[in-house]
Length: 251
Image 1: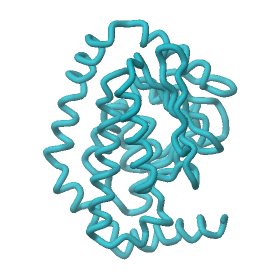
Image 2: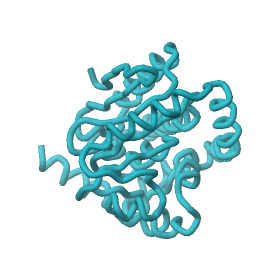
Image 3: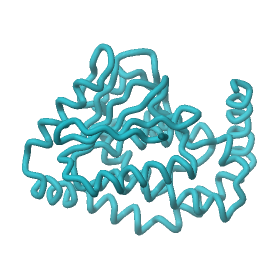
């Protein structure tokens, strides 16, 4: 199964096991939404999001998305933005156990969590959209704004730097940095959160995040159009095409 579900007491663990480093494509969006549907039918008090393999999530599936026509790309933007905001507003605490590369959309995926536990190591985390010549759609931007301290916005969003787990932790993007696999610490934190009353948690979380979601939805149409136009611009076609070629060469 592409998204593995495991119940650990009052915590539900979702483990991503999708192709190409959990690359975000239509199949990924469908699988994750199905997993969240299942979570919402259970009394789980908290959710842990983890991954198999060397990557937490490598971002958008550039191999597949490069060839989308405009209507398909618009639908894809709506799909991944809807998924990101659904995770961001999940009605129970979400803990991300990140032990591998989290790039672009994969970084946003990690940032949807209420708590992020990073494994020390040589993997990288980055919002490198500017490097590819594309902007962040409104939902992704608001999630990043919520996760990043304002003093980090220039390095992360305008320069698109790549950060080690230690650097990300120093920038207060991670709540914990651990040696070895982060899953045990993530499950411990999730269990503590799940032990609290869920209704007040959900109400507080909704109130805290509602302004960001309102801004994202207000700008959704315009930001989707900016993203689509940038995607087909010569600069982005060249840069995304080069990354796509490198990915294909690794197959």
